[in-house]
Length: 328
Image 1 (tube, one colour):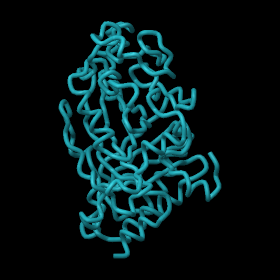
Image 2 (cartoon, rainbow, N blue to C red):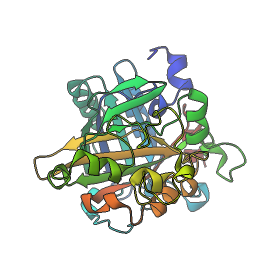
Image 3 (cartoon, rainbow, N blue to C red):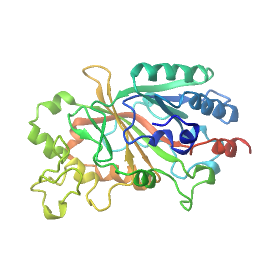
Image 4 (cartoon, rainbow, N blue to C red):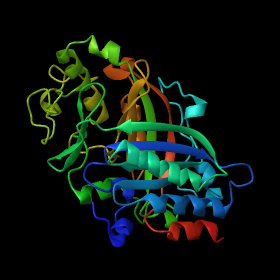
């Protein structure tokens, strides 16, 4: 990752690098009474994040619906994250006016950067936070991969080129969004508790059929992970079950979901571990929400429980968006 100021401005921190940095903290903040529409608050948050971004840290600010001064200025999909089928959302671990995500090369670097950023925002109220890691974080065939708590490799479904990542994750002119939002991204965070003990009672074979891939990422018919799935030759699900996770998420390999996943594992103890699912897209309805609807009834559902998270919008690089929102 380059440290030059021009690179920092040109490449959004949330999409920087093929694989994200291996450690992260996600911090949701509520703006205190009387400051919700205050441009000074947004400015302070922007500068607090900008001060720590670079080098061993990639950090960004994302806006919840409560951070924006009026509905007319709001990205058209931005609202509170709804509760989907099977969710048990804890209000204290869900939503937030602002999101600070700080990723880094070590847990210590992330912790120190987070402390620095929060010191610059003393008037705001911490709503919730989550710390995460990416075990076996690496790049293969242009994709950032890691191992999730279910022992499977994550990231094979992501695009393999910078152009494809940008296409899926970045708002463009003509989408009906406010002009200040062009170049930004919708971010979805889902804190998903995984029943790892329950999962580990199943055989590796059964786990692979539930997931729809082998643990190393290959398709169940032996097709390499870098190639498209051949679901059309298996219409009845004899090889890859129709309710397998990857088949529900992306039933047509020619049209993959238009989003970029950059998730982290969390571990708060033996009874609370799972995934800080994170994805970026240019259109929330066509990206995350379309996938979420397809996943209803998947075989993996009994092993997962979403307890928190939220919908946010990552502004484009630079501070033009800040001026647009605060100089009205």
